Image (cartoon, rainbow, N blue to C red):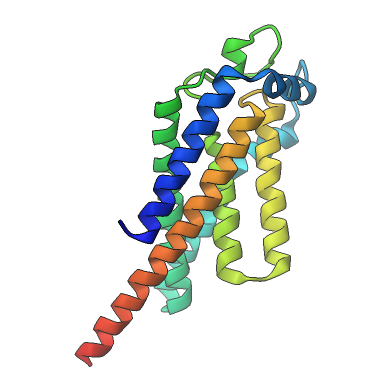
Length: 208
């Protein structure tokens, strides 16, 4: 088993253990959520922030890849490929964990305590918006290594996570697990991309 696969296996195991633990002991989880989620969560700002997870992720991945292909910029192309792989892996990993833990949404379990403007059913753990946002932030931070990129990226991802609580869509543990999934898959994807890129470079040089 490669290092990247081992990392994903360990991450999957940890996330599942956390999920099952909070499913059976979630008093603090629901109390924190109730303190954040208002009775009428209609703020346009937080709804837009929540939705931005998909738009920003798409721009950071496919936008970078398209620019790299169009301009011939090898670095941008490699970063774009890595971002697409990371976000795809994040979505897949999140789905697998959701199916494995099968946690009920807070508004479905506590309809008199958690308020939403639109019903959302299905699995709650982990938060898909949060995992996607943090995968995007981690990928950008890994690739650019600048504080003025890293800080805004993680502040935005944290805002997406908070918006899921404000809107009553997820428990705090869902958001934390989503952040762990996103960051973990981003680092695993970066490691794998570096290995594959080096291998491709060596093979290419060998044919020159």
